[in-house]
Length: 255
Image (cartoon, rainbow, N blue to C red; front, side, top):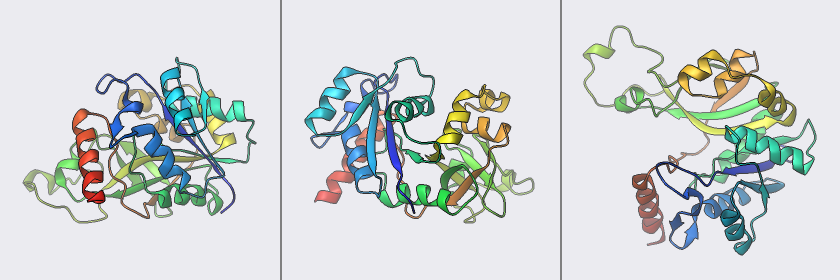
């Protein structure tokens, strides 16, 4: 695996959790914990893409590099692209987009996403994990992915894909067969050239319907390689309940 960079988009505004990047987790702001996890990977550099001076000030206190980005970006990918441009990274460089609300992200999966691009002809890489809870299949907040035999993404959806025509109606809760349904994990590795092209493309019709920006790549025939995650990736923090869950998990880990 060659050198790669990590960018962590950290948007200050959040409707469900105001000031989310600075949410306190046992004395450490959430975005700092994400950066600390990313620094345990093999990344050559880890940069937080911020849009608010309050976040930048806190990152300075913890010695975490940051780049101030525009406040009007419509997606985290656009924010990552601005950092790439400001840092002058080359077209063939690999950048991993680590979500700023994933304080439990295992460093091994960051390495894995970058490594996928060195062993594949695809220009974009991401991860997935098996869904065994039937409720998650029908949860629109759990994004499902269907892959080809070679690991290329065929489609991402909030809908329960693939649809089990004969058995879904008769199933009542419980676990599902492993490896039939896959949850998409929102970490991406890009070659800079692919990220540049992505940010120049218009939103795709399917992207608008599903509210999933990765569908823009598939709509424009840009391959995405998807591999099962090398380690379990806990869910990110979107709500106060999620924050309480992560605090509890880390508290138990320390005990």
